[in-house]
Image 1 (cartoon, rainbow, N blue to C red):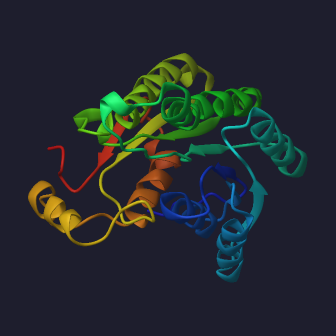
Image 2 (cartoon, rainbow, N blue to C red):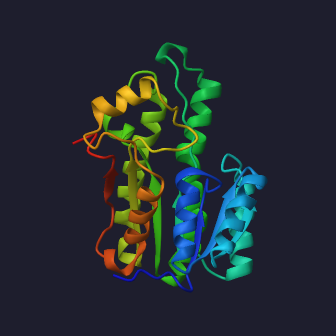
Length: 248
């Protein structure tokens, strides 16, 4: 199976590290023109340089998904440079943990839902304008197994990720007939900068994950490529769990 994205333009939000960076690198390796975006220019530049060193094509556009004007600028720059957008991976997210009774509605709640939900809707709306003209496109929304399982101290985070499942299903039904597929990925515990190492985390992994390990970012990136490829052309509105069996 040869998956190629030659000639395709791919935006990956939150791609300066972790799952986003691995996804950007994987698309570039498959031949895509990749737009790496995030708030940290220094980290984004490192990802772009790595892609170019491996023969790929990428640019960095500084983007804050909590700011509408920043997302407007992102899409404007991409269309100006490439003339189209083939794939959007809504990956940028924030994880907050605090007791339910301590939720600050004006701070933590607003931040989590602005980044984890509102930005997905807003950026998808901007990108769909061009995908609908092309009558083709793929949108991947990164959710979490927290959308299925919930957990103490992470109610706001889990609620935001649950919202992404219904957003994905609704978009898939609305735009499938117009050539655009929309799917969501639900990662479990993945080795990223947000995941603590050792101690209690090792115990959680041993007790909860049948494979007895956390996943790697590439183990999320590669399924994303498949879902956006011609080999997955009948997959639409799916919620794909990648968690080593944690939620089985």
